[in-house]
Image 1: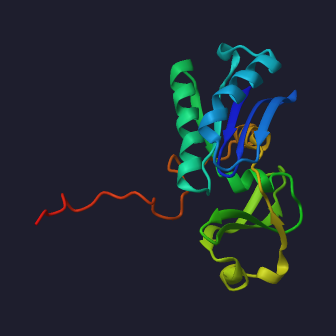
Image 2: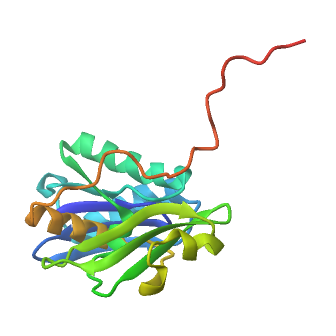
Image 3: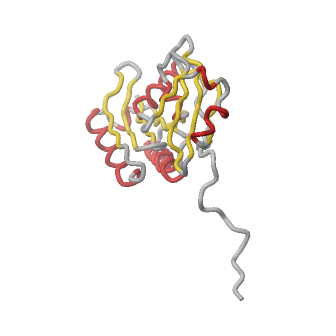
Amino acid sequence: MLLAIDTSAGTSVAVVDRDAGVLADRSSGDTRGHAEIIGRFIRECLDESGIAVTALSGVAVGMGPGPFTGLRVGIASARAFAFGAGKLVVPVVSHDAIAFGLVAPTLVVTDARRREVYWSAYAGSDAEGLPVRASGPALCRPDELENAVPGFAGYTRLDAELVSAASVGMLAESLYLHKRPFAGGEALYLRSPDATVGAGPKRVS
């Protein structure tokens, strides 16, 4: 039983169980209001599912790729909730959650803003139904996709506006069941944040 969170695009929260499926989910396509609604979504999903925090096995979270500001809200929320509840954080690649269950070769594309896109190419699914990522995730301009993606013509393009937390959670459950590795602990921003630490204080003349 997992609480699942993804804010790599909009905001999505769900409570899932490997056997019972999706018990509750909430999603918003707003790409700027993550911090304002994520707490309410978590509370509503827990209430609707009727699952006590103590019954959760962990918190699955999408690690991107995604823009810095939005993505960090979901990751920070997942880590804070897990810490307070004494549960594990289970990281997955957000694009893998989109591709979960797809059979045909698929190019997953999401908005990276600044006139760029994130992409991941999938060869399909393996014998356990888990996505097989052939290349990516990576970042490029939309007009660069054909040259950036190896074997571009062999993929069906899927543009996703939202990453479902329910898919994040069910992917995490399946990865655990089949003893596959989870994602790393670092967020997949794929670009430097806007705010950076300077070399020192500015000289006043």
